[in-house]
Amino acid sequence: MALSRKFLIHAAITVVLLGGLGILGAAVVVLGGVYNVAAIYQHTRPVYEILDFALDRSVEVRIGGIVAPPLEDPLLAERGFHIYRDKCVQCHGAPGVPPDDIGKGMLPLPNNLAQTAREKSAEYIYWVVANGIRMTGMPAWQYRLNERDLWAVVAFVELLPEFSPKEYGEWERKAGER
Image (cartoon, rainbow, N blue to C red; front, side):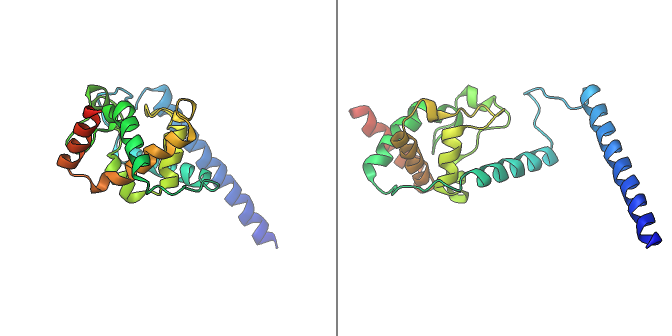
């Protein structure tokens, strides 16, 4: 019994000391200005890994009640294309269309949404479009777009992996004819 109590006391002291060292280390980094926050420098790989993990976990925890409606309607995707062209392509680009200077100057760089559509669910994409992501430049569109338009953007983003630059250009041309 005494051994177990002694062990618990030592374990508690060790945890407190390690926690204190962690706080002290964080204070040195923050107060010393060690981490360069200038937008002309990329984050380090470990920082990106931590941020990506935190982003994914945060979104996954919050999308539980979201159920995607049927997204196969071509008119819904076409509506999403128009919104994407007006509000998203500047930062994210499109097949054969690079991001504008604003998108190229952001850190972290805005995601390639064709890749995002390959890796993430429609519900995940919807949540990000609706709620935005803090400190990334990704706005919350839920106050500017109605529910149908939010899902229209998702329907279009879901098609992005299938688009070639030529096909995207054809959608652009058709949109210009209207």
